[in-house]
Image 1 (spheres, rainbow, N blue to C red):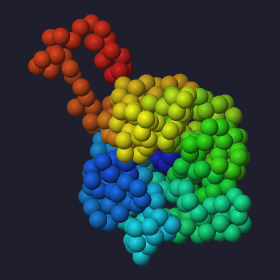
Image 2 (tube, rainbow, N blue to C red; image 1 turned 30 degrees about the vertical axis):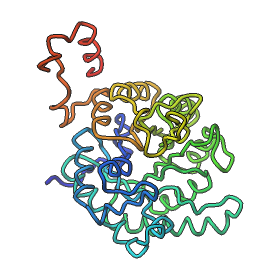
Image 3 (cartoon, helix red, strand yellow; image 1 turned 120 degrees about the horizontal axis):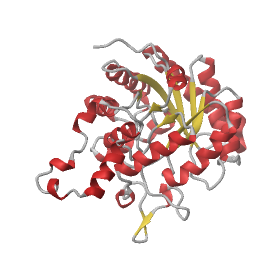
Length: 344
């Protein structure tokens, strides 16, 4: 087993794109280990090997960051499933699992905090205390178990994101702060997404950007504006779903007149080729941390890593359709060029 890497996230970003990968909660729900609805990561305690295996699959696919599965592992959500007494155990175990797999390769470990559903801008003074307390206890355990940096993500409110940033900076760790974008143009507390990212950067965030809610088509235009507005590193982690101007977020997608979010989204899934194209386009815009969020899976991460010019352990099993017993002799010149472009 290898030792923990000595190359931190900021050093890696200074030398090129960092490939991230999330969507653990959605993927483990598909595999039958997490209950849709509450989406609390009980799997960390109930089926730890399932978490380790998914980390390992992401690592083999080219993901450089093992994100501790502590999304929604906070007091507010654990109360929903009657497991508030498992709070510390769940948080510590999640970081340990991420560390175990990170040591199998040259990967970083990220602590993770997220939207708490406790913050209220109309009662910011009091609710901020609740949010800060939750972040402080989660990250105190994470630091004791060993993390390289912190991802504070899916922030609906700039106010809540700033609380997370303050706590991370007090711990003297690199901070990646990303906003959720379910609203058309601004955070729930009324800040334009680009303006909000600039405020976060001005307050010391090392990496700012967007995660979740939007697919590449509706996230990249915002990311392009953010990249032009800040001098720090920029992150983009979209969902692999076909969002449009009419339905800019995956919460708005409907199939046959029925809401698809969150467990009927399959008709809108992007192909691996489309996610590879996203990675190339994000890189061309100057995005530094390129990943994927809810709906993500290892084959997407591999396609994105290969599109960025990487050869990863799972590349050994990348498609070779010319060897298919039925299709091999039927792969015409156009198909060959498509596969060649994708691999390049």
